[in-house]
Length: 266
Image (cartoon, rainbow, N blue to C red; front, side, top):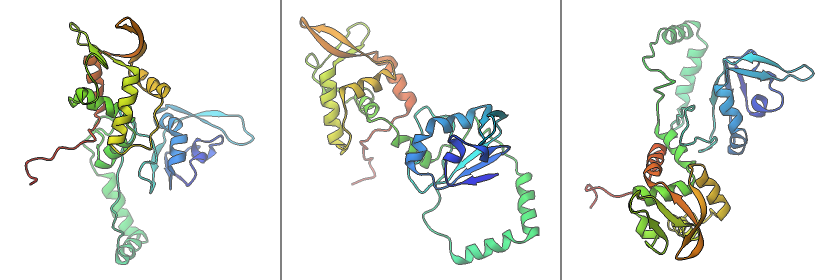
């Protein structure tokens, strides 16, 4: 086992700290470091082999048997994407245990019989679920995943899954629908302007979208941007396969930013 307060010791240029290790604890992870090394962390979790790079020694490969625990006081120290399959998140209680609790714990940890009892209990504890296929999805996990949803996807979810299309766009002027396929085109300029309106309505004015940024995000889910002649004028538009898009948005499990009150509220 190895513990470190610096993720660079695990994912930086030199990583001899994790050589021959089965368990790695990364403490006090800052959001900037978690995001900077997010792709390397994902790779380390799933890779069958890892490269060990020690100073002054030629790099070599080991079989990867690491189990990784990350501790942080930050609310969003790592990226959890909508299609994540790697992470499990637990949030500790806000209430700090009493001095009596820690005194009792110290007594247990210094007593060999107590430690053996704990060891024996854990060794014989039966786990009846497959962590790989049935990992617990906690409220803390869902909150972190929601933090990492690009607001463009929130906007599209509001449009296509919450019947809010005509709140933002005018049919004929801003968008057209194919009578046969029900596919849709939306003018790029209209999409950009109404996305800005959506951000303002949801108090997200700190987000500054660009045409290029929106185009790049939409391309991630195969929404293309091209020139289409509308009323004899060449116009930049986004082309939506609405049926396929709804399936993708459903798969992403994007929550609405607008909550409706139920009948229990007066």
